[in-house]
Image 1: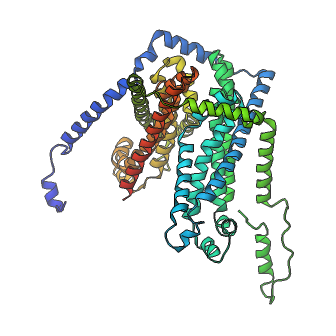
Image 2: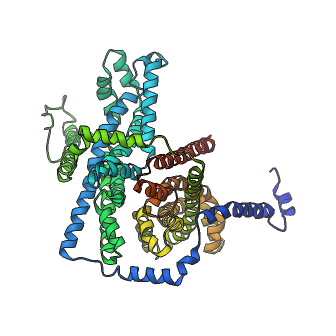
Image 3: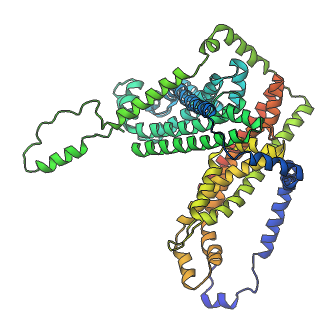
Length: 281
Length: 289
């Protein structure tokens, strides 16, 4: 708009010039939104229905006081540890999945790639591993857990395996991105001078990227603690299973205690991971 | 990571011996000392992992035995062929649409709710008292720290089985996330325009509408879209506790060991997630070009 000040003042419109457009877009949004609201069965008035209000009120009023009896508290502490242990074991196994796959799929460590384009076979191998990682991480961990509960039965094994596979996929992808985004010059010089791929990795790539790799792993551990609680809902043990049981029995006091402990756990994991990552810089 | 714990020593040594022709001989740092953060970190990580594996009764024997592998093979074999009969595919299609609708409505509600909570949670001007800031932030943290699935399980009691509970669960959790992000965005917006209006005696509401809002709007939209992408994934599994969508169908058929039907549902889930990924990739490409 090349209008000088005085002209703009004279031509100032009496009403909002974008008015019709706004009304039109708002109407269009409503038209699009309507079928979505129908499909999501969005009926807020159901919340103010007498029966559901009564049920909500009884449930919420049973939240206070939270149950703090000795043996129950002990059980909650045990389950909390199991939750953390599941997340940690899952991340360790995820590393066992992710590290070899990352090493095999990193383009910087390609010897044929030194001469320009990678040869056909290594390229196909790396692409295949990338797709494998994509499949591993695009199945949600809850679905993996549902599948493994059928195979190995109820218990933490299913949860650990679920975390291992999903997080293995995520870690593998991000590790690859971190390694490739850095400066590959040192590693490639080593490769050109006859070093092996592992040597090039340990002496060229790892020292440069160790901070970032560790910090991402710690962040993912924090996420795994969160998701291992959720895995309990399908029978993988830990805090989630306890919460599910208490909720099904409508034991509000127990639910309140577990929720408080859970929030505390998440906050602690959050702080611990933030502190560690700050230390790593 | 390999930060030398002796750097301060070395610096002071350099200062002390600045006149000396050569830095006096120093022993290399010991491999483990109390100030070596890396050693403590590694020791802690190893200890935590060992304790975890030791305390969990993992049934590896059951899992890696020949028999278990065979049963897993059989289990995987039962997935094929997926049930592609027209009525079932239509049912899965409806559930997919329901999942999509849950995520869209949930995210929209969350954006509105998050904005309403972000206003008291942000301090536009340093001189504001903003007594509501800390409590609102606690509330946002509480909403955020409880995952969608737990919210859904809780809300089943007041909203009943079905997608409505899932939608509300997504909305509540996401409102916590978005509220915090929105508050940060509002606080970090350049203060100039707001100050210019304020010095002319414009009231707070108008300052927000005409100075802060236009500045932060693009950021709010991009945060909301990002969370929507997350929520589509989350909505796909929310149904496992009975909150509608693909997850509910999955839990139902898996519980009855209808493996070919389960395979179809899993396929639909993967397809949905892949489509969302592709769309967001294209959108990001276009936005950053």
